[in-house]
Amino acid sequence: MTGDRPLWLGLLLYLSITAAPTLMFWAALKLQAVVAARRVRAAPGVGPPLESRVADVRRLRRAVRHGPRRNRLRRVALLSAYDDVLVDLCAAIGVDSTPLTDAAETGSGRAFARLQVEAAVEEAGIALDPPTGDTAAA
Image 1: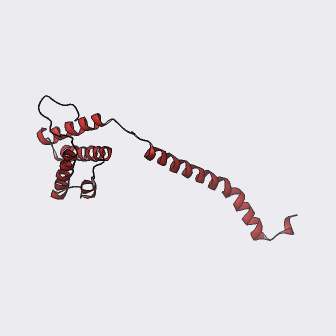
Image 2: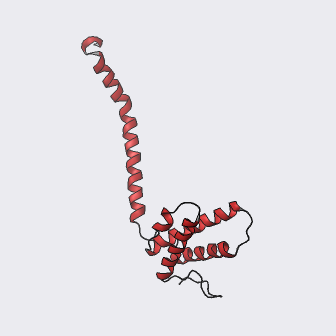
Image 3: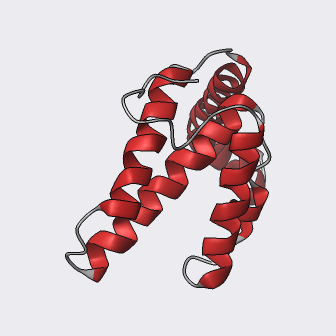
């Protein structure tokens, strides 16, 4: 029984028996991840409501403009958080945020891109600096 087939055929059979379950399991996991990603992208209203996003942008904007200047690390972290929330708000209202996402991490180019995106959000009808006493979303 042992000598009725060539050695390479036996090795090929052995490799297919040992590798097939691993490859099938890996493919199933990848397929599940792709399906889940499509489901998340296609689901409307995923994430916090618009009012919450606007409130976060306004809160972080006040902290960036009027907050205490403790150290560089806090300042960079605050600006990064503000940029992330601003990009998230742009995605929710359908405003183009590519100037901010394509800008370098630091420097005047990032600040200018931030101003452009803030202007686009305000043109869309959301006041980033509401009148005093009114913190409700536009």
